[in-house]
Image (tube, rainbow over all chains, first blue to last red; front, side, top):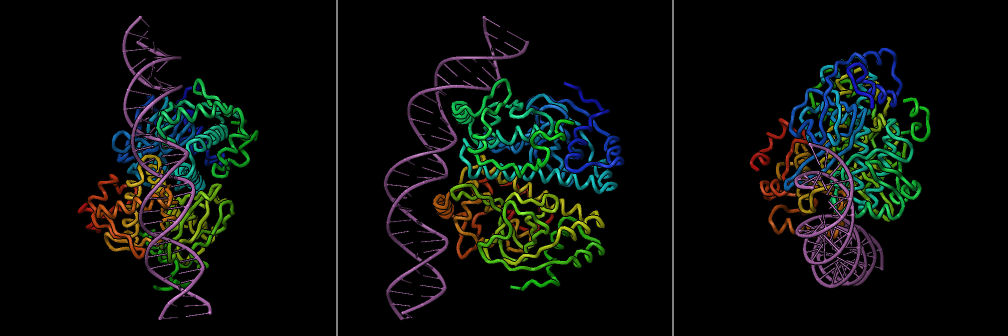
Length: 255
Length: 255
DNA sequence: CGGCATGTTGAATCTAATCAATCCACGTGG
DNA sequence: CCACGTGGATTGATTAGATTCAACATGCCG
């Protein structure tokens, strides 16, 4: 596993922006000279808390991060999962008071980029501003999809849907091979992401294994029957906007 | 009810942008000269459908609009409600393929503004670009709040939360007096927004009326006991980012 | 080896869904 | 003016999906 250093810390971000629209030479070098602060975060550690006022954004370099919110009596809702290249709190650039917390799920490495430098960059390069906006929109689209699931999909479908989404998302980011992806989260985490209890997650998982749809072991999710999994949850990948990058596209492999 | 004409069609938008950050004279006049196409939409009519490729954005001038998604067997999830001044599909500016449908709940009037002209405006005025981005972020914050509710709040709390959110949102937009707001939706619509069935919505409503928390008649929601309603759902208005405008509403602070 | 986090299973319970009537307000046409 | 139709609201009875509580198994790490 390559260790992130200041020198190439921004590459995951560049990669992501390129995926939206290719960058000019000036844009790329401006990004490369962004000042960043690297920080390692232990598993289950908070990075930022609801109510905090952020003055920098957090770029994920390694590991899994999640956004979450808490209610009384320990109720927790995970709002999203984030991996290398994601910018989970990019919206803080315009809304500094956090309406959710950010925590590491696994051991992780993140890079902090100050709002100030991001703003300067956005002012100088309209194209970068647009792409950053684009990232927040992608995020919102996934949020809508999760909302639909929580409101209208029963547990089995909801979980199947997540198991379609994650491998596609990770593969597009060059972090997974086809039909298989890392899933380093506990059943309790899954439960909090899906709006279920961990006991029920366990039972639904058992059901999916019995149907031969998936295997999930050693923190790796393998899709055994894509066609069936897609059918079960009526999966439509439009919202992920993977376009050409989806299947075996060179854009993915080049990463 | 004032009829929207081309001349002042953009005022609700200007009002909303001003609320984020006051506009310069040039910005305001540039906005005023935006070309718009006004269209009346009958109640329950679709304005745009999932999968459509948009080349313009829809600004709500009058009436209530919702975003929604459908699943098989008539399952519907309403993703958001929108009123005068809202830009429910602003994200189509950067992601033209719609991942949800847009429909009028009541009779409504909308203004279409072409992506082209919005893009020109954004290029010329960085401040307008930023504010538009800001609007999409506000939207995402509400989406996260709804997600939390669907995942972790039981029906009663979830509905109470919506009944806190709507009056505050509408009041900030100048569309409601304190402690009361129009709610021209059916119980079936409410159900689709909350991820419940209409039968259950009816029962929860009955419960809230019995507790003396609200009245809901003639399409008007009145909050009878703000303090208690806020308490029931642990309402925290941060995510709405009403800031200074909240303070103007004594009903909130009293609670 | 012991301890702790995570995963698994069973039984009882509960929330919300489903199915099925009925009621009510309102508008329309005879 | 009243009968009728219609969409929405209300209520009851039943069922299903998910939670809760509790116990036990497994795997990993010091």
